[in-house]
Image 1 (tube, rainbow, N blue to C red):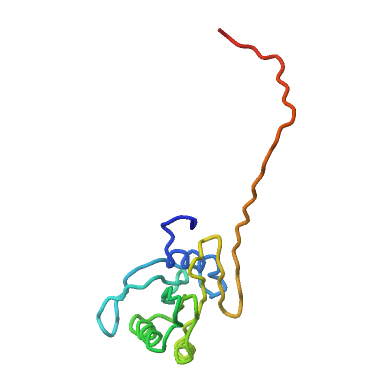
Image 2: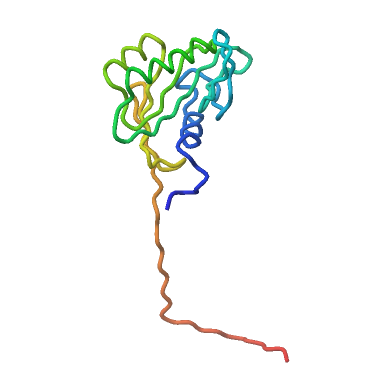
Length: 160
């Protein structure tokens, strides 16, 4: 069974991004929130936000646990518009399979970083790839069996 049921893909992604925040030149990541669109006037629900303390710079985090297809050009264009509308400095797309060719072009043009995270990842067992780096978390389980061949008990006192 997975480590705990509360850990959704987005929560695991946020937790792991926080562990590697400095590699994105950020101070940390927060979870789901709603941002106001400065141009459209609409509200955007985002999966996470990367930030720098004391500065207005932030990036939008979008998690898409698609296990049968890469991120499409259209989906990347939608994220690019959210970045533009909210005034974000860029974005991070977290998904197991990465992006299609057209999506990669949009990501490059709009400062969107692709992060590959396996769909079954937990906070401690994961495969994470970004910025030409791979990070792997492994938990090793060890079973210990103790056998006693001789047991001697001395000076046993029983109170009545």
